[in-house]
Length: 90
Image (cartoon, rainbow, N blue to C red; front, top):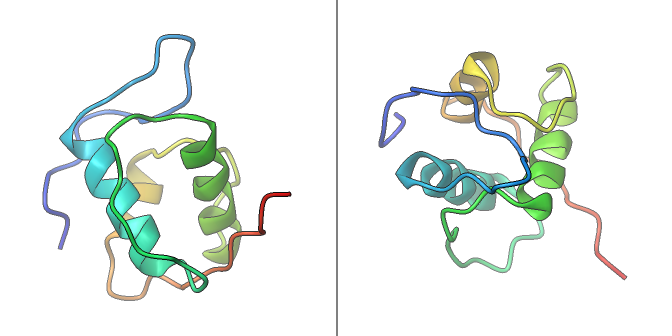
């Protein structure tokens, strides 16, 4: 179901990661967000993506790391991925 294969751990780092795999993950997170306003990912792994990954991980009984490892990637693109609500930013 993933549009691109898992090839690396995606995470927040000083020099931000970018690529098609991050955009795919961001777009899937947007699809699964209950209060989503739509849109598309930008392909850059920043603090908002890391925070959203943590909420997804908590909703799907995964270790809450903010990193997209193989287990999180597999859960994210599975048909059983649970939707979640991202808290509003002030």
